[in-house]
Length: 194
Image 1: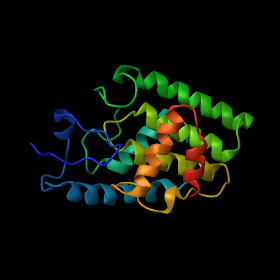
Image 2: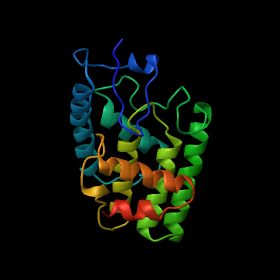
Image 3: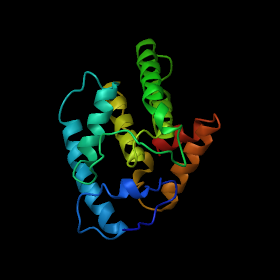
Image 4: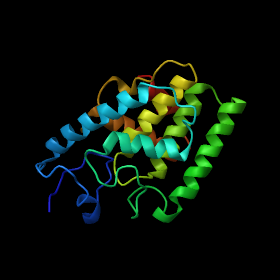
């Protein structure tokens, strides 16, 4: 069985999830990161290449995850079936995801928050829910980017660097998420525009 090193804030995969790795040639974390990034780039091209009238739907979230990781993981686009170091018990993920999407559709319709805050709160809650075995941070950032675009606001900068590898920027991002866990959204609002 292959073993990979995880960056700060990354969720380790269980052995069954690791068995879902499609490319057999991958043996290191660096190779996995590179392969996933190519897959994610294709998913991003798909996402940005069209309008999404049902952006805030379970079907779209699942389809986006699948587009981002289907060449890497057999379970891409399926909800996790195990508990993780983050998120609720796996069996309540679909229920809590529907609640989150209902909340955000209401917030968009009623302009409950300014666009940045609305999307930052959505991003935080989606990361915290952690609906998939892996790729939740990247998926939730792309969902946030698509949502802020749909609200006709400027794209987020996410610290101006990749958040996939261990770095000071990733640490700042994780700390902003942890502050949001405690009810303080301000660091995340600063980070998304830094």
